[in-house]
Image: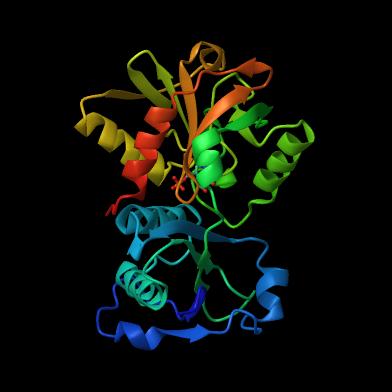
Length: 295
Ligand code: PLP
């Protein structure tokens, strides 16, 4: 069975229920050219994406990922995606992947070639990196100034902060800066002193019995993994809260995690120059839940 699957998708209008969905995408060889040069050179990262996990043949949290794709499209004023079409493409890709193992499945919707007829869309699934080590050992992180106030989204909506846009160059630069500083990952903090998110993850803190994460004010991406984990924590009798989290709260946290769809939950074992206690059992419990089939 192939370990990678790539589908080129002709995006349907959101309200199109007549077109047979399977006629709107086709598998292509990912090692062969499939996109026009104009796609990459003129669209300026003007598009959106989603990355979801496929675990042992089950696509995780498809509904929340498609809802965020829809929300990102709205923020970016892209044509609303036809969610039934994306769901059919995901089902087709998952059916073509091996029934065991972890895969990353990426959905991309870009504005397409400048002055072109339509948006460009594709789906690409490939084996996930092996994150078992970091899930067990945890990671080190540094705080990095995001250069924006925590309420920036309201004052400057054109920054598209709550959308998962294709323009991840600054997030990747933050990761390189973290590596230069000897750390594995980064935690963005706002210029006015609040915790935001990781470059590719959400931040969860625990103080005593309470789990908290920054309020989804539109300045950060609302993570599907954080949402799902909070539902699980609530369902198992734990207290969760969304709030504005001052940077000082990082120093008083009993535990800190970075969570995301494919790496799942990793404990932060060191932040800047401070060691952080690690509850290996709790992190393991999070990942047992996150690896279970979730819709
Ligand atoms: N925040 C940012 C900036 C991200 O890029 C991501 C995921 O890539 C997340 C948060 C976590 O989102 P999710 O849990 O849906 O993967």
